[in-house]
Image (tube, rainbow, N blue to C red; front, side):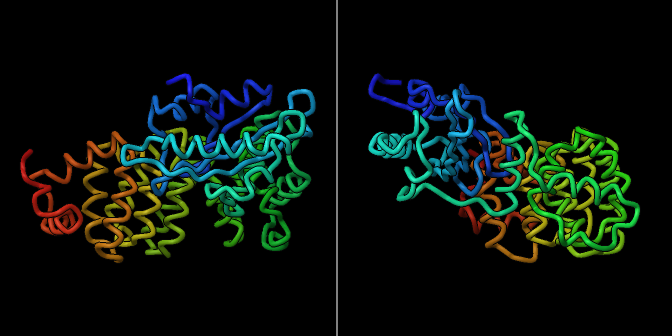
Length: 350
């Protein structure tokens, strides 16, 4: 790193501004300041790229007054190896320096990024989850919508009134599964939840780490859905909910069951596996099953190329996928899809 380089991490540190960094791409997780600075200085590639970008939330505040805060949401393009482009970082730093007068005690206002081409607005679900996780990480109370969700899910009769529950309250509940017996309450209620509420909870659970008891319940629901040839959307939600299970074998069982079922024809379901269960695809058997299913999915070559291209941005996955695609044992369908994406010379020995 040259003396001319200025990173966001260093700039805020010098200004005395407190900062938390979150990845909002595949799933919501926090970065340490050191980890993010290594990304900024191109010492390491972005660990979890999504659609060839880094999706980041910067939570900034004045350590002397936590009420003085701002949140920046940044969608930063990456190069082909997953590294942050230094020109993008420098552009954001320069915009910040130009707007330094608009800061409040060292905390830049959200207006500082109004004309920034890298700013984005998260979807409602991720926005709610981000606020829930940020509050928990900063040891702040959950929103006022949290307790009504707790009360509703603990009721034995859950067939009415769920439409009045707030998305923010549901996000607070999922982020705080390990508090107040919330996870045990959810395990007891999961089979009774109204269909719409069940779908919302499953969508949020991909950002949590379900315990063994909860993931067993989710696996049971997934098995039933596969046996009954249920809607791929429901199966996709169940797979997503299991993607970060504390018991890794439960995630692997779920993916193997799906890839060996008729549901594996669904491009939406395969995209869910690729974007939420990418770590499970490091297992060679699951990766082979996934690639074979992708080559024969209902959305054709376009889905194959698009989903595979996104996975190729993950360095370890790229190596394993190239090896798998060049294997002599792949099906004719996978050979054809690979040739259409990379050209006929791709599979030749290197």
